[in-house]
Length: 324
Ligand SMILES: O=P(O)(O)OC[C@@]1(O)O[C@H](CO)[C@@H](O)[C@@H]1O
Image (cartoon, rainbow, N blue to C red; front, side):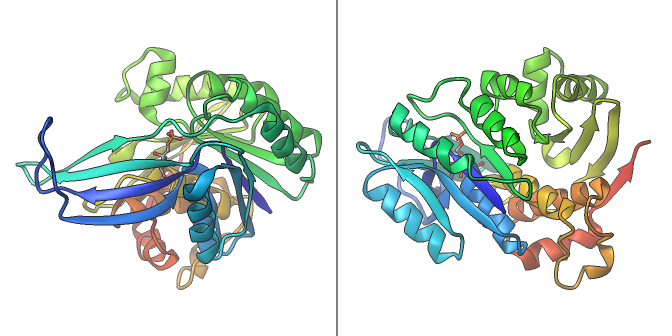
């Protein structure tokens, strides 16, 4: 079973704006609600890939109730810890066409409710129930009140019980979690460039920075590079490189989370309807990268998280090259 933890989940309120100006009332042309936060997105996509996934983390207030109802209605089981005060945040995602026809995306993410030590202890006890067939996915920013080493602590708790752990976060929360030897971390090329002080477009430097994360404890480092595709790196260096399939950006929200879910489902040997012949079976890192790239791209080309069918359409035209 995959258990995803989102410390600060969100109702994602998507707005399409014909134009935007500061200091005046702006009106959208279309709105849409999705149930998000990085781990929630990963659980939703894993479920779409036929995997056994449960979404966990912290929720609060009526927005928290709405989030759980929405996620469960999509068929994804939830096991969130409810906080006594506050409201699960609402993140506003604005999309606006630029003069050249490309899409401008602006996000305003809420700070979210404060998490208290009792809630953290409750979550930790749930993680201690995981076993060697399970995988813990820790995704997204830490909520107010969470210690910087929370992911490191939860990852260590999962490891003690034999579960694999995936960490998709940034900064100190990411580097501290490496001590627990996570199975996978997924920085993007910009986050890696910031950590290493290099240029995000310099592939050699980005691979070296990813290799450093692997040498510090991560088994695999999956580097998403936006339209340029993705790189898979381990402690020895580049394992495989994939190019993103062609398509127009409609929505980047959840694309990285879809990539994580695709990679994990691919590694578990998931095949998609109509693409069974492309699946070599479980534990094939190159196929996992291919499914991850197809999933990330399919979400980027759709208004919200992609369906399994949309990912199936892209998988045959997503190409990955092993590098050793
Ligand atoms: O504030 P965080 O935790 O860094 O990111 C939260 C968020 O932007 O990430 C998801 C997309 O990856 C969205 O569903 C959500 O609103």
